[in-house]
Image (cartoon, rainbow, N blue to C red; front, side, top):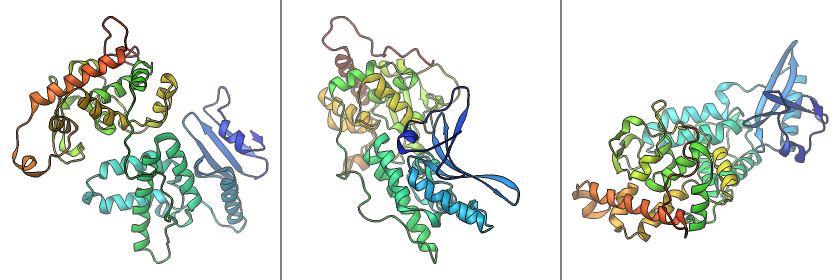
Length: 381
């Protein structure tokens, strides 16, 4: 379908009814099209070379703006006119360089699994096919803007840190490459985040009807688990009422035993495969947007659930050491080195206290017994 593309149209473009995806060709830039699918919008350039029709995909919208896409299409059209194929070779794409970096350096990184997941979620879909030598600062800025809007400034800065690390590594191995990242591209105003959910926000989120993802967020609030710890949780890690997070998936590199409260156990879905929640890779931003819409809340991140849970433990009178052990934090000093007590009963009491204060908050001032399971708990089972 051909039409004049504008910034407003690109922002609101939707799939035409009955089509799996729709290409909107730009009347002002021959060959350029905005491809809209159910999950994303991407830029493509259609051309013929040596009698063969080809399509070049060079990034997603809005990470690459309309003006940036037109510039990229003009460059590709010039290359075709000169007899060159604008398709990047797989060896020099940003994704290929990132994968090479992880192959060579990943074993030395404690957060290697997290880095691979962040690359796959945030960087590859938007910039993965781009030749690394042609990567532009404006493209990175557009990507960071989108991540900041969807997942918060802290996540945008973490993504920037990943790109900076990979691009600096590549620059150290190349005679010609210079990283487009400069100082001043960070989004967060401070080095840390202290956002916790208010009681009203917690109540709205808890009662929002958002299917299985709603139960997953409730589970995070009752366990203080990190997002990926719960998302990659396996049934084999649960024994009775205990959840053993293996060292390979724990940021500290140590096994972490969490005695689950009855309220947390009640949220677990019916078994369907090895993954408990069935969402080990990606899709968090889209699900989070749906939860925001259903609950009428915004301005919070999934990781804020962990911080909120820790704060609620303090409100419930849980001793600091016990709460820190529930979060899996390493206790420093002599106690952390020599005290090998598992603190199972203390952690069980802490999680029960957390469940109790959450119940009081989500029930509000109304009389009667309110179950900890949200109204949407049976959806998606």
